[in-house]
Length: 330
Image (cartoon, rainbow, N blue to C red; front, side):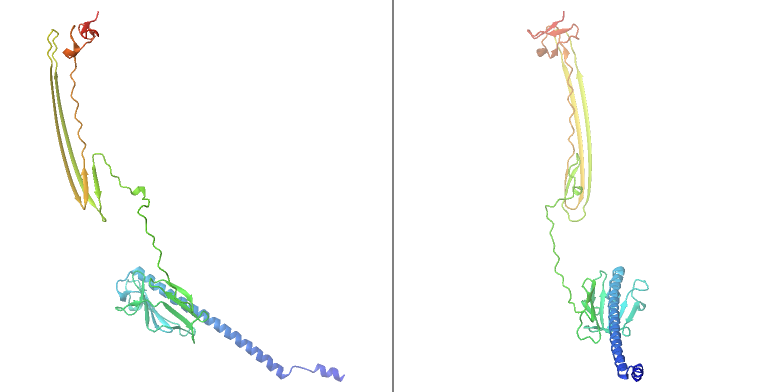
């Protein structure tokens, strides 16, 4: 009976309770530390992304407005290790005013800071989107890297920092901390061969019947004015008089008169270095009228008397092959 009563009254000692609380405290401390570290890492990445987006907005604003002076270029001004200003045309009036500056301070958001950079510093973008730093009038090459690190920051690496790379052409890239600045080699340039096939639609026609042939060797725009005036006047007068007497005497009179008048006027006015060849078609001469041969009389020779034997003559005749003279048809 005594043993049973003593067992039922046994419990946990104070030392055991203290050990449990100590272990729980250690676990809670580790969990809170891990949570705070994760929260700080997330907030650091958000600040780095916000800085990168600010650079991209400033570049886009300059590309849109195309400023011609340094003071009117959109920019990001790093004023301290925990703050920067974004200067863009927020009121859309085409110029940068005092109200166009938006200040961003992340000192109370997380234990992070911009390291490795002397402040104040500026990153501006011109009308082509190219980036530069330094004060206006003495611009320098753009700051290539901005690193945002967890404080205290002994050495930036992938676990405690993020970096934003800015190229000379204004493009940005989000990098892990500790990464080196990327380098780019010269692009490969290929030369087009002179023997490359030319689009046939670009071929220049070079033959026009009765027109002009122009050869221009200019690297700029050529303005050519060609005026051709061709006047062809052809006058043909043919007079044929045939008198035939069918008695042993023959009288032939042929009178042919051809008059051709050709007048060609070519006027060429060319601006630039041009070689113009103007050709006008040569007028085709009219054929000379051939007199109708007369009918031979009976006994005449066609060769000797320039006539021909014809069954349509009166009387009808035919050529005798033996004598070579015209004979009466019977």
